[in-house]
Length: 278
Image (cartoon, rainbow, N blue to C red; front, side, top):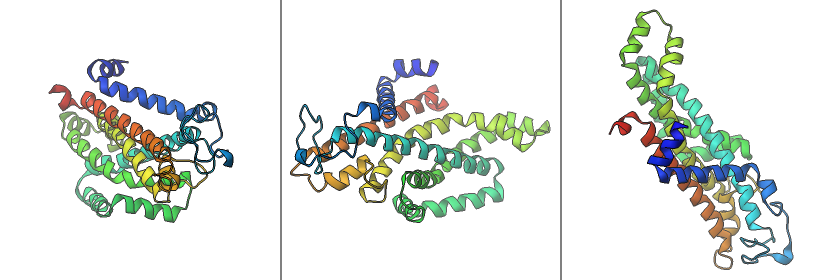
């Protein structure tokens, strides 16, 4: 509650972003109840209808209600964003904490592995993983989670290097504490704040990458809607004739990325000790 109060009083823009995030999560959870139509319910008579009282965001070339498809698309974006970020954080924390705490040859070997992965463009590595894993929501989550774990590990390694030099770490070692106990009782609790800040910022980036791979045709296969897929499939083909097919998915994508970005910036300002002291 203290963090929420500080977010509202000191970072109102971040609080607005947090409220939008909660709304998006609620939409993702209850899309089947909120949507007036099923995402694949077609009606060729109503194809390419502009926004109206019957169809708030209009319809696509198959007469499917765009408003309903955007609500269901929130399920894909939120699921991929949160699940892939969780995988990235867990894997990145394991690599970063172990590398930063033990150092020496293990650190050198792990960091050269990270350097080799980061030498390739991130989007290319995601596409390669998706080709290997095959189509599907689970493949998209796993590919994005693995690809973002290595950048995450760099941030967590830096925080671990700072914590490792503190006097209480040396005192724990001198008292005979095992490495496992030092990691779990002293190192991990002190790098939680950077992990939370990094995770909140990376969610928006993961959502954007998911939209990019869906736009390129490597994301969640149709007919399940995703915002990037809607921009690619119908939005690009009917951009002039039916501009609402690209406007509303793009607006939803922009709103989600904005919300997670401003929330992540606010959490960074509140949780980072150096920024808080300043």
